[in-house]
Length: 467
Image 1 (cartoon, rainbow, N blue to C red):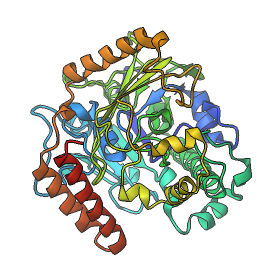
Image 2: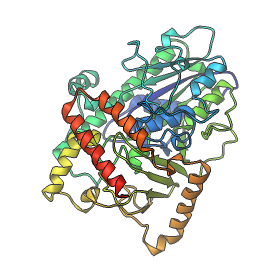
Image 3: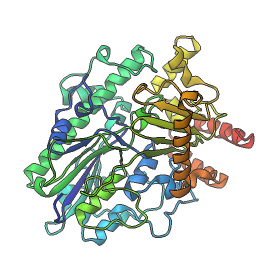
Image 4: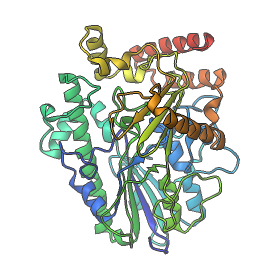
């Protein structure tokens, strides 16, 4: 990568697993992301550090595991109990501003003047973003621009089909969809997955529009572009869980003077975008930053990646994982709780309604009904080569005892050294504060508020009972 100070653009999608042509997707075509990959480097084994937007975004913007900076609970610090970053830790835009960069955070649709999505789980200064649109940039300074795309969230809109048909010319046929084996081949699931694939096609279209703009404005030759997502698809076993469906994301980088058409299969994490960005700006990474510049000539690839899931909205949980190229180890720290705990956000989705209907009617097979386990195994171990869908838990298999111990020890060391601040339960006063703020935020939806309130009471009962 060039030694001069380069501009950096992050194209940041939501709720999008790595379903692009350059990652092997064949049901749909994604020509612009594939083109970007051909002109740069595609990391085919890229993972977020947390499978929900605010935790993941908090990690990326600090270049640290969200668990290491106290930002691991989704929608935390929103009430009267704010979360502050540890002393000395700063969000990336502040580091860049200090180096003379102009910074912006742009929302979709492009150019409407709104600040793009932040959703950080800590107090941050609004002044760390100088603008809300790339066109506001000054001519005499390098820039860092983050452009947020709705990605998979588009399918939550009632007008999505009409907009997608106009933008894409056609919609994906639900019957052409290949579902993971842990989902039933049911019309509701097929339609939802087809809608999701159309959001991937739309994201691809938007990525192309952004790349075209950089080309047209003469910026392509001195700008690093990073395309990534906060976490995977919002599905029953995706978002909020540490299976690959929830954590494996697109991560494509196009950089001046960097070899084109590079395909990498080593393990990277989305927070590494922060280290790549600092390198492009000629800024040394601070000692506290855990991100790595995976484009550096002296880069030593990771042997494993880590991920963490903690409270999501009102639903308390603590799950940790460590993943190598071949194995994934998951630790369920609250194994007495059901896998699909009550969660108003997920339970509000049509796929969850349908899944519960099918389960009640006995219409799910062994792997599909496993989602409704009333208790979890404390440990899960998967051979990702033999079992890429993570269906067969090997944690109690004698033949894998040595691997289990090795992965368990790796996670234990990470918890201690990182450090994992989620090892201690969230103070009840902060939970109450955040829940009051959350209920205020969704006050216009009475039925949803009632579900949240009911779940809050259930969470407190389980906590009191040590479950």
